[in-house]
Length: 146
Image (cartoon, rainbow, N blue to C red; front, side):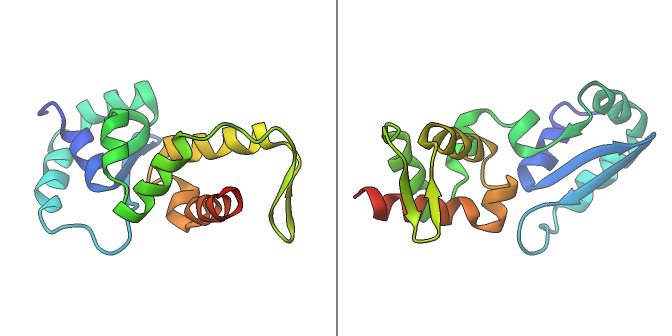
């Protein structure tokens, strides 16, 4: 199997994992996968046994966990979100509790900021980023602190 095949699929937006000895893959980005992915999937099927052995070492290949260095994750944010991520990276935790919105009181700012950092580290394909929750929290936080 060509080195980088699993990483290439992850960068395109596929999560690759095992169910028993079967390889499963799921497209995690909005919309349809690119047409060029069919050749990569065919190559993965050809080299199933080797891919299974690799996946047994780490269970799942996702764009943010196994395949991309942090710089690549940062580069893949849409520009409007990247500016929020960059802004957040410059912040220090507020020393006291605050209201993010009228109905959301942040009682432990350190824990809240740690959670946002984890979401950012997970990248654009992380669960909260895919659902828009991370972006929403960053926008509200910026409005609150600026």
